[in-house]
Amino acid sequence: MEWFRKAKSGLVSQERKNIPEGLWTKCKSCGEIVYSKKMEQYLWVCPTCNFHFRIPSRKYISLLLDDGHLEEMDNKLASADPLKFKDSKKYPDRIKAANDKAGGTEGLITGLAKMGGIPVSFSIMDFAYIGGSMGSVIGEKVARSIERAIDKEIPLIIVSCSGGARMQEGVLALMQMAKTSGLLAVLSDKKVPFISILTNPTTGGVMASFASLGDVIIAEPKALLGFAGPRVIQQTIGQDLPEGFQSSEFLMEKGFLDKIVERRELRDTCISLLKYVWRG
Ligand SMILES: [Zn+2]
Image 1: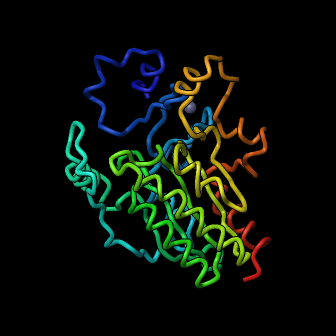
Image 2: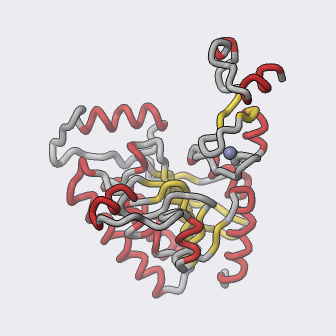
């Protein structure tokens, strides 16, 4: 605990190299230094300020689904490079690096699962994969998960985390907004519920399409939610933005969200909602 006391008083820089990697975690919001095992117990929510750290998509799967189990589907889809796009890297090289880092998810894990015994079509975005950006593969995987919900008449759950549409695929990425939104209209006609869960951050084309079309929209606390980033908006309109702009709490106050739910209550809340709204 000597190290912990010094860490709090800012005396650790010379001794940091002696601390095993990952043993302690510094909160990005309040600066508190917390024992990583304790953070794991708290589901990576800061015990001091309630900041929700971003966690890998597979942790949400174990947290939300019955037995932590998802029957994964559509794993064979892979991004093409129709525009032969190159910035600091060629797009195929960027895809390969992202697949190596994120374990080949192509940015979204999807399949069938159960929540509280109720069968659901479940999808979760992976921010580690090129900033959770939506290219044509993510759009197609989301579309297929909606189609499964339509065909099997089971509720749809999508956990979003995204920086927006993937610029390397240009208009093909933007078209995914229309494709997914159109299918959600069919789902709505069938009166099958869609619960959209927004995590930090959910922005851009994802927020402007399926993420904001849930019958019930819930978000984790203090998540950044919006279309363009605050700096871009501020520069465009030439005005100061209100306090807390684009946070979950701000959107809740303006009527955009139905509920802000802490991570440890997400599963129980979803199950309660499903039992309340679903006939299945
Ligand atoms: Zn904190």
